[in-house]
Image (cartoon, rainbow, N blue to C red; front, side):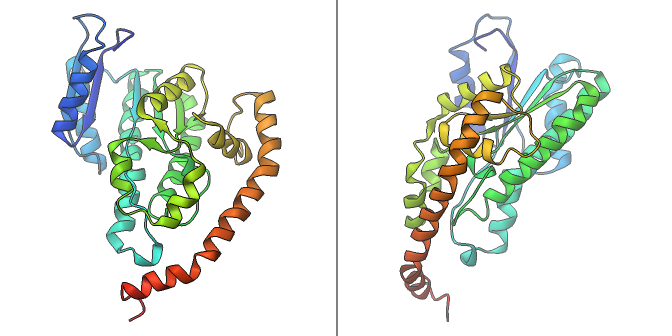
Length: 280
């Protein structure tokens, strides 16, 4: 909105949409800008296609120039405590919502010959993981696989694909996450300084403007990005080389410290499970 763009936002919760519209209205550049909000679930291909159709209607069916797929929810807990729905919900919220959005948008962009942008949002936990995140991290790793594939494939249509890997973000969702987060998980992630929503959004936007395929907003995630880069494009030959060197030394040390914490927590964890009747 600050740069004069038309903006459409999609979410299920109408109140959150209304609040977002109110915030965006404050930074409107001119009265001719279109700002629309639509309440849709994006859990299936059809729902995502219906949402896209509604978004495009005010523009005579033209696909958006850029789509930011910002979706996901986490419920950290121990794997052995989970129910089937915890695993299914983790993949739906963390992967399928964004995947179905890209599925609909990429088809429309390709058909219309629009050289647009699709931006996914993963997590630092899309590069690595540790205990407590078994319903969340796999979805974020899957997003990376999808983004890396589409970053190559959608070159056929001139469509740019980016993926952002934010660390902890201090949002209402983070407060909900902490309601179920085991203490050992809190302790393990204590080195993550986190970002505000505004800081994360700015880092993502700058990365898209710079043409980065993989975007990070903090040093720790940049180290994991460089050390697990695979065949993804480099952001900077020199800086990524430095990150590679630092991560080569620091990552094994960090991992060893995490494993030590986990092992030392074993007795307390067994007592916790016993109190929950897990062994009955």
